[in-house]
Image 1 (tube, rainbow, N blue to C red):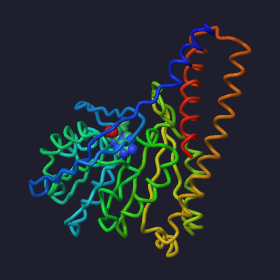
Image 2 (image 1 turned 120 degrees about the horizontal axis):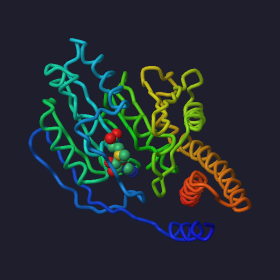
Image 3 (image 1 turned 180 degrees about the vertical axis):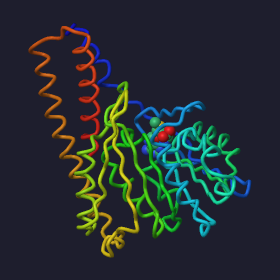
Length: 322
Ligand SMILES: C[S@@+](CC[C@H](N)C(=O)[O-])C[C@H]1O[C@@H](n2cnc3c(N)ncnc32)[C@H](O)[C@@H]1O
């Protein structure tokens, strides 16, 4: 069995899948579309996205419920929603059942993803939503500035099921650039799994207590001592998950001037992330060494070691990027 594991380790360790996509901007509001053919390497993790017409994920339900509450306000006539890493548009599949026609007519929807094929599917699915306008942007989350000017702000920004796919070094950049694009009372809703139902090569799923430390570093450096959003934890059948809601309206004055200290916020948060990755790698090494000494006897142990090897590879890869 040890030989099998060693082979598995040697097979997965040198693999590096570099996904390359063409950047393209599809603007559906006026029926026009424009293209930018510049090529760029986006992610090292193979992009995946589900599209299940018969299912509403709880995290999507939570988001639509929140939007429902906001759009009930008769004073609101325009609602700008940016769905980061929108995938194939799973989140908008059931809006017709949960937002009235009048509510949907207020929504300007922006989907952003690095995979053109997924955006095409999301675009197709969004045609029946009755949204006021629909826009689909191709790009890397860590390079929002290339595609979306900071002056374009949103009332609601969502990022679901994706943080584990973001290179940990880029995480503070994605966080910063998303917050920067929130309107005065806008909010950012993030949700992700703490452990994946089946491991994905190169993914780094975070635990809610780690997200808490990352946010603390980010917000303290930003000058926000009172406001630091609390990440929740959710127990599901096949995994556990975390979520956080960041509301621009709660930021103290100093924190609103965040652009002036962008470099400092990102650098300090990256240092914190590196510290957490190294801490995890120490634990991972220790567990693998224990297995080496005791051997693997059951299927459960085998699965645990497999998960540890995936973690080992992902952590080493992530640390190398700092
Ligand atoms: C698991 S899917 C989640 C899709 C959708 N948000 C949902 O909740 O159903 C992850 C998505 O993130 C996208 N993605 C991963 N890394 C990205 C990056 N660096 N920039 C932009 N999109 C990214 C993938 O292409 C994929 O569509």
